Image 1 (spheres, rainbow, N blue to C red):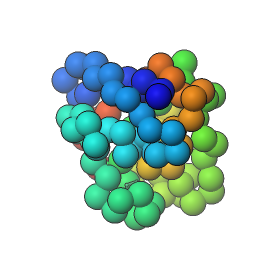
Image 2 (cartoon, protein in one colour):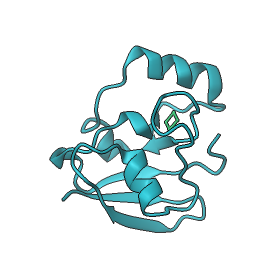
Image 3 (cartoon, rainbow, N blue to C red):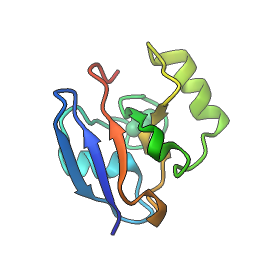
Length: 107
Ligand code: FES
């Protein structure tokens, strides 16, 4: 099972086990990572799952689709170059050791 690292808003690192095929949001919420939410359950309707993807991890993530890009543009302030909606990142073996930063204000 891939191990995922979340950096919570207080700077603490939380390493959790990810289930293949689940989303990064699923792993963060299931493991009660501080600041992690997924209020719409991954339906791409809430943006509460917003995360920043560490540079070392970005190229290993599921590519961003147009609707996620539009959602980030219209609702996440500030949007960063590394912003993603974590419900749209599928956990694969390639994500093992990946790092995600939970922003101070998640939505
Ligand atoms: Fe709602 Fe990701 S959980 S957009």
